[in-house]
Image (tube, rainbow, N blue to C red; front, side):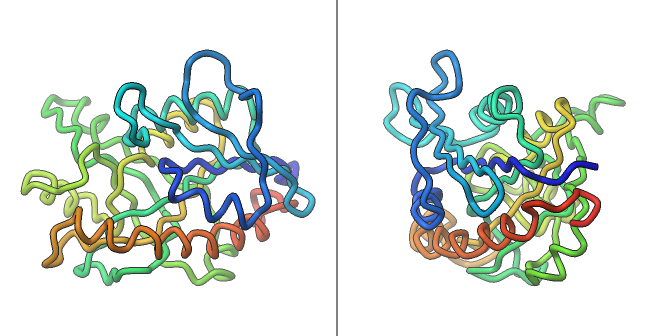
Length: 245
């Protein structure tokens, strides 16, 4: 098995990615390595013996905000796998946690699996597809080295969590709620690219504060937590065979 030499990191929001890009000393790739009108931005450079690409989904045309959610994430992930050909893809970002699962603001999770909580298709066969369980790349040594919390990452296309989503999140045994990872996992399965996810908690889904207020309040701190967490992951995985993670 070949060692990990090319690592791609996909992050939805530029505010989440900026501290990491600066910390790693990466430069924006111009022109973009991605063909067509996709707005994704790529920042690349050498980190130790590895080539690292940090990719953001880019600005949503006509809206002036970051392209968040599963559709932009899947589009960016497809371009990454097709054109950058990473040995390993890492999805990093902020997310909601659950006090019922032991989560707290500032916690960093390393995903064990990916599921969806808003794709409800109550037809035999399609019901399992809707949830769409996918395992993260096995990484017991990385978990031991970093001490990051393990947990299922559950994906939906809304920031809030109405009761019907809360019920699905409980069924998924989710420790992390976010808006991209399961879409990325779908693409990685197509290309047979191993996927890790590192998620920093900005808000508590089953807490007392409105999600949007808590998210905005803690976004900067969570981005800095990612700045500390993701380089640890990159440093550990670079040059190792996947079986040694």
